Length: 80
Image 1 (cartoon, rainbow, N blue to C red):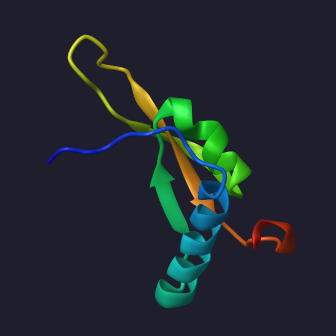
Image 2: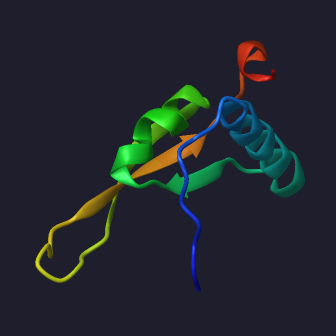
């Protein structure tokens, strides 16, 4: 599977917040995201809280981890 990676655009933070609210409304529990370390700031701006790290070993980096974020309650400011 090929993934297209691009830099975040101005509306992406609000879109991520909307997706998180919809996921919680549909499934009844918060959305969790295993983030690329370079995208951590994006998820924090979108309202997610880092709740830990997950193992993500790759050749040459057996102890590598990825930040684990959770979208909890979304504030009115994030509902743009």
